[in-house]
Length: 491
Ligand SMILES: Cc1ncc(COP(=O)(O)O)c(C=O)c1O
Image (cartoon, rainbow, N blue to C red; front, top):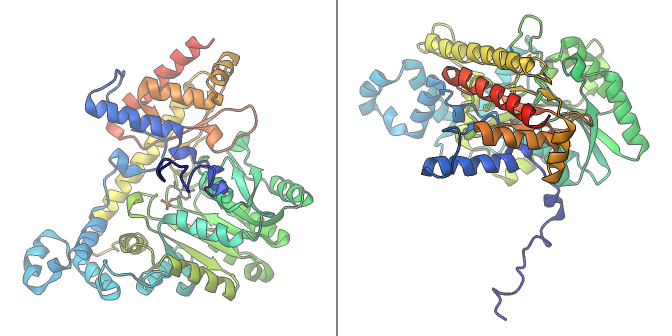
């Protein structure tokens, strides 16, 4: 027998078994089917009652034609092509680029050198200084230490680094919300740590109750889990809630009392749609404002941010950062060592972090156009969020909490026994069956609630409200029609 015909050395039975436990619904079965349909449509194959696939399964704004912020791309392009900044080209370039884009690119290149070179493993020091300044301004003057900031390839890689640091052994537990963004459950499955679930309360707008956290940590510890950290996603994904300052304070006190590291996923901090009643408050600010000095100095906090969300939406550039507060210095050394193993976060992402954290200021050449672009995207997102929420709430058997923040709605759908039986026949959860049917009927790809976790015998799906505004009515009426046809078919 030839070697080729023998069983492969690397086969499904010999890979790391933990990898097989990883599930990531956002890009799961439904998304794969959506890609097949997209490819059919491009080739003119297959028969579908729609002419495009609308990917509402992922918060990826530019995939749905959100325009990039001009100033950001101007600076990025100058950094990519430094020839444009040569003396002999500057006169011409000044006709195409505003002066502040040119000066920013010059400043960045001075500290970076070339975007084609590895940078400091923790991220370019100048850009970390920009982030520290941003955090200080955002948090009402509380200082931030640039040497405790790590630039990352999107927030995801930062989260993975921290979860790996926290997994001491197979008894290590991390508290995660249910429903949750599946980066957390997937990464815990990969590292072999224990997810310790706590439930958000749908009836009160997905609020977070300390009694629920206490119950969850107590029962996990009773069962022998060494619970080490609490993950909070604020504003929530998929749930869209934005926590109050009072709630943040309680959570911080809880972490102090229970000796838990607090991981604050704050990637949606500028996607805030009810700013008067539910403004965003960072965990860093809440910690620094905590009345007890012991708590302020005792709670270990890591907070994550990203260029993928907000009005920036530069998901493909893979940029982000995390800030560490009150972490042991030897742990910081180990985080640094692990960052060095992957050499450095990509420079394009780092540049966007600099721009997100230090956008054009009043009086600078790009300020007006920059603010108009941000405002236009923000207002449109807010309108679309309200419109889709109304549509969901008008649909029979559907109830939907409003998105105080983030990019998602997570409606609950009542599904009949006929649906439950039909889904079981196909080996699907009822909400996955519903979501597949929606994709086949409308081209709209959502994610079933079972991919995020949900209370038993409740069914949900998550949809972004990112489809283009000029096509939004059509998008909404497609979903409404699908839903009523689906109900009729399954009475
Ligand atoms: C809550 C949350 N955290 C982290 C991420 C990861 O974002 P990125 O790695 O693109 O920064 C996402 C992406 O959707 C998210 O929703």
